[in-house]
Image (cartoon, rainbow, N blue to C red; front, side, top):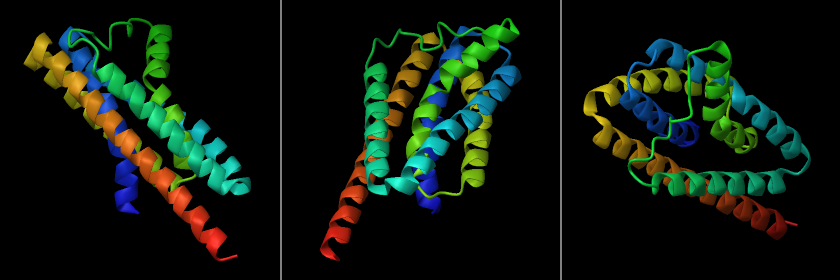
Length: 195
């Protein structure tokens, strides 16, 4: 269970550090406000996907697992494409934290991956409370470290490190999606053979 939990949570952390590094490079950002907003949104957004995944999973377990696998592969492919963009592209360019509204919109913008990842999490069978607490804690720590580190390492290296983190997240999401797809196929084959 721990390995499965880590395999779902860690890629979300790579995505978070990619944005946090870019924010740190920008400088002058309120570290704790951003860390708390990111942790709140990245903890709560998966709940929607988890709820959908669990409801669908009860009635259509194999299909839900395949859909979850596809969602992770698409999410990973998107991360890989973004990671391969120009190293000077700033992932955080549109994010603002100067007003409550802007802060909430930034929270929504950075947590779309967690919303999408929630569906396969819903069919993963992992304990939701532990899963969400782990995501929240990881996000809080990684955001704080990423912003602080980004402010120290400079623009060129910071943005390249941000891109590299996105590539790693994408590769892990694709691999995890492939594993879930294989498990769904393997489970389906076993059910068919036992009939």
